[in-house]
Length: 482
Image (cartoon, rainbow, N blue to C red; front, side, top):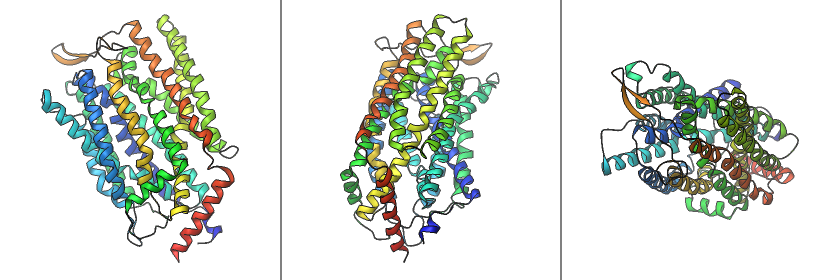
């Protein structure tokens, strides 16, 4: 394949659209769990903070340990002429949909059997979605044209950001029918919403795997998969990204509070969309801004500038929210608060999009040095940072939120008979509870993003070096094609 061909458009519009819709709907399935699973444990199952921390910690550790083997399976060299990721997605799509629903369905258990069931379902859901998530890896190899690849990743990032927020709309719409007895409780609304997200997502993923193409050529030589892990650990850029992802992952403590803050301020978890929508719109616009800025400054500079901006936007959101609490009858401060949520979303454009581009560049750097493509193994190693952060946040967040000795002292809702129908009733939260929840949701979040930018002071795979590595990777693939 000549250099001129490699610089041409390789992905037909129809194929790109189908790929983007499929990743959008898969991310919607993930977003249903990510946005509402913890609310389900607190508000529906009424678990104590100790039990929630236990489930989160055990599952995070076991799931991460298992993903070590998952990564080796995915990174096995494909047979000549065969796709690497498409068969994996096809195999995992239905289980991913099934276990997304089961994350919101719990039999009438108590004590140890309940904890064991929750852990089992969570581990199986994590396994299914880990393999299904390779649909996002296809975005890296849809084109060998670097500029087109970055464009694909940009649009993939945009639709994934929207897809992650889409369950907020689904739950809101389902919540409009809560007067119907079949949807009167929060549990039933969660289950119904999960079914909708899962059925549509699974069908579209299976269809997309019949349409999309993988355009990067792989060596068919089978090698010890542990060598891939060794090569990644030796790569300084991968280690910097790992450390950054760990610090960024700690922001999940702030994100954990979002649905509970929405319930405290707005009276219903379904209204979390009023938080998620302005942030989601900001993320969408932020990614478009990042795509334009990449033509003028490099990805490292964009990431670091956005981190400083994030701290300022989160400070603004905190003080606007504080004024809203102090002046509950004034709509002005509420509007200003939602404006700041939009401004915070602009920063997500960088932190959601650029790590994927960094990984794509690091993959090529490793490919040039070792002649191996290690997409899944790199994701696993980078995920060490996310796993450690996940263990910490999963253990700490419920203890910060719930209980008399907690920092926030959130009061979970109760199910009561209202006009003869069992309904979920939300309790009033104290002023201090609201302020502390807001503090963690905004200022702590901004601080973690700022700290996550520090490792990039030492990241040098940009500019001419990045272009040189890409050219060398193309030359190696051309040899494989001969």
